[in-house]
Image 1 (cartoon, rainbow over the protein chains, first blue to last red):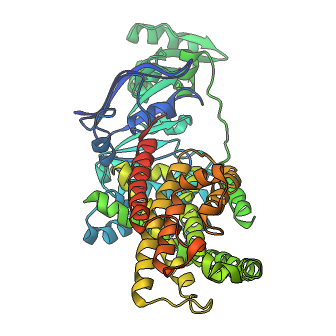
Image 2 (image 1 turned 180 degrees about the vertical axis):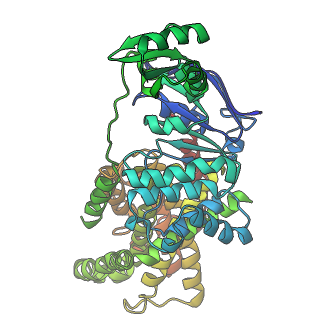
Length: 326
Length: 255
């Protein structure tokens, strides 16, 4: 499949600090690409370059066939963006926010109404379309932003930590919509996250730390790079079973707390063979698969901290109201 | 085409919000009327008979200038609000020219300000001013041009500030001096040397002067306009173009 985003040796410095340090990657069409890394790893800087908000110090970024530095307008017209902080106009209604967006992206007038209503329905906000955005919850605002990001039919939708600060239910709701985008709307999704469970659903992942990509691949590939799954067996006779496994599969299983265990590439493929090799001996089987957290731990030597960040929006709104009163 | 749509929708957004916030309209009309009737009435006792025209009539163009100044700049520095609350990003990543955004924002200020100018202007019979239909129409037209110029100036200012704390700085160090040095309250020609120069650098001076040119009859003497109408219009038009250009450049500048 053709690459819709292609990044080569991209570097961005802010004074002394190198926020992004020579990264390269490609994103295939109609997939979900995840950028996984801790805060300050360079995720937002990368997304800002791809969205043409800032220029790279060196290197190249091509989105939908256009150079982000040389042809920013062409890039902008083919992408949708959901920023980390809300960029909605809270004094307008949900519907008005969408109409505003449709106009500045040059959507044909006679299509605006239908597209706005479709997008609101898709994100489950149709009943609230004429409410002012300031009355929306955090989850609804985020969904409205996704709806807005889709209304001009972009090829790529960028999302910077789309579920940050949302409660679990809103996260699930939003995530359901996001995961349907490639198939239902033909949109490629590029998202940053530091949630492992979200990274798990991406088609491909790049793990970024300290401005560099330290590993990339599908979640499965990344996990297999740790040496694959481990199968645990409870048997009627461990010694006999160990021998039979060695005969049939050429692997010598270990024994721990009354259980046999053996390393395996993909456990679900190997388990039937193991059971066939041990007729009437197996009492129970389980297997453990390395998690993305294990992957991150292996490549960086530490775990991603799962911070719960409160959105700064509500504070800002209070301040704004204060300033207006005085 | 996209750019025209963008300009249109930026103006519509401003108007929609303006209509929605009734208190904003009321307070924006109240300010010039308070100046006109309270300050004007008090001062006219001091500077009355000798000068050839009542003080209230003298400051009327200046009060229109004040209406333009406050509403245009307030409308433009709402960009700082948009910056603070993120909405500006939504506009900046859109596939439209920076200059279209600036023009859209300037026209927003112009629209909002023109509505207020119209309301304040209609007070002319109350202060004993007699204006022909032509004078009223020309005042409105020039008022729009001045509004556009001051709005685009406001955008240049807004590009320098990141948050609303700067609001009082703008109020005290830009808006108030601009108002007092515009010839609104006293003729520019009566100012001492340094201030006279400062007022000549003030774009609002020419706007107020143009309005004086339209409203005052010949023989106003020291209270009359300071420059010719042609010079006023030239400065207004050229400064508008310069401000739009400057603001576009400042917007384009990336970190």
